Length: 327
Image (cartoon, rainbow, N blue to C red; front, side, top):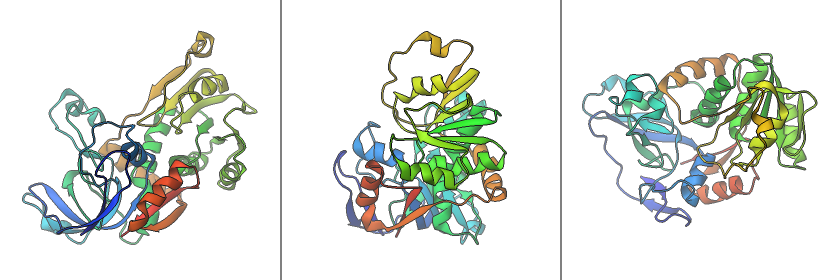
């Protein structure tokens, strides 16, 4: 197999050739068709998320074909197309797992962080955390749904059922969940970096009701706002944009510090909530809805060997939609 490997945090990934891995008990072996590049990968590589397994193969938006199965896994899974998300394994025994909140598991494993991921030609994954996908769909188009889509869906649920939805940071997750929100007959208000007319036009092309800079106020008070950009300064700005009783959802796994803000912004029963990881139930809900909503992911295909360039494009804000690595 070939893989792009992180040897030390803060350094470029290196191409490595090594024997194909073999699945252990409860695991399956995949031939990777596509793996999208997520901002969380960037946080891992740059050291914002501490203590990754090293050396590490990043990547957690994986689409692949099952080539081998370990003990206790049905051989009928061989040949199927599956998707692998960020949450790669849970203990199944802690209070959170038992209580239906496996995303908060006390002993989780994360794909591309504490276990090797999909910036490779082959990968071993927990069979219980690999979701069957449409065998006729384009694997490149499917890949961003495995995190940007799933986390976006969890954020949308947390935001509630209000009609006016603000989205701060119009990248991979935003462009997916905006399509679903519009399909649900909501009005989407897209907030981008100040002056980023290309991103604002991209949002409008998807059907956004309004698009502007994150330093602006929307023309109407929002029922809820989702923050995908990892910028803590956006929290008080979002509170200034939501109505009384509105909710602000922080959708990233990492965010810079939230600055001190006037209590007046929180008062009148506004709420601040965060989203952590995902559950398998989220996937069961999301994929049929994405299909019914005819979600179209906007992607830039890159050879596996260009993983560092794709990460830097994401780091510098040069991407509309998502970069997808293809071995």
